[in-house]
Image (tube, rainbow, N blue to C red; front, top):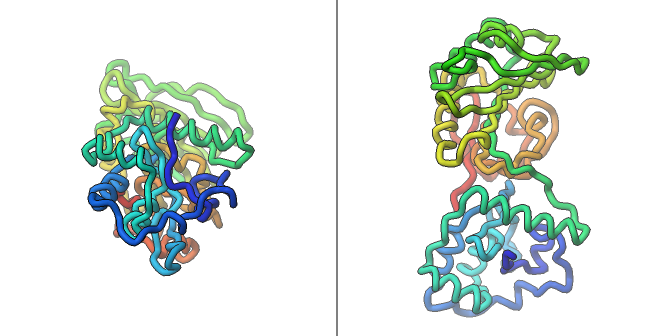
Amino acid sequence: MIKRVGFYREFGGHGDPSASASAPSLRDAVRAAGEWDEDQIVAYLESATEIYSTMGAERDVITGDDWIPGAGSLVTDGSWLWLVELAHYVRNHHMALPSDFVDHIRANGYVSPSLSHEQSLKIFNEYFDRDASHGATAPRSTLRPFFTWYVPALTNTSSAALIKQLGAAGLSVAHPLTDALFGFRETVEGRKGPLMGGPDVLAASLADGQYRDVEFQCWMGYDQSLATHVRRIDPSAQKVTFQIADVPEADREDAVAALVRALDQDAAHCLGFVIDRIGTSGEQDWDRVLVGHGGQLAVLPDIVGIRRERLSAHPEFAAAHGTEYGPLAVFHRPER
């Protein structure tokens, strides 16, 4: 079972919803001076694997002035679990840590172990399942990595261009050996049928307003594919989602790179995109955040791109630094 450290009553609304007045106070852990190797301990805390990310910042509860980006996010070294803000309080207030945790850090040579996606998923599920057993509300995510982007409603021309862009990036909508298309399409009335034929049939289906959902495989070579789902959000926009979880972990960065190459070819028409290599933001209502109305961002993925004219409706981006990508402002989750 994962051990927890630093879940104080002042953090009751972040990370551990079961925290209450009975939890220890952060103020009681503040010291005048830290451990002799405090800098190395802080570096360890900041280098652990982040398994759950939140957007925004919280004030330092001791001083009330400093802002802590990503407060409430969860990080782990595989044995212990703590909140992102723990490093801030150790560095700035010399907060005391349990002796067995400090011994553990020193025994690891101040180097946090690397965790696989499967290890991160196991810890994530253990943590939130435990909260659920206490009757608390916790995010329920399948933790499936994905890459989603939004485009204006596809026409015959733009859908054919999308298929061509995927091909140029090394992703084929038909199997490289059989040239067969594997997929389904569903009408707005809910009638679902197989998608058979070639890329021209797929292009026509993507552009046909009678189809709400179109599902197919994008092939990376002969034996690897990404489940791809194109959904009509409204008459003016469609969402294209690639399940990078379908690709073996060792090859996922290649899949992400290929999808970025495809997106780069028509960035000017992109309405927004999300890259989430772990899947922690899977339950975020990205439709509302990126193309609809409302929908405040609660969980930050690896990368999110949003149209610059929409930023005024999302104050949660105000403290973040974005870079330009065509008509989008792109925000990266800070490295810890």
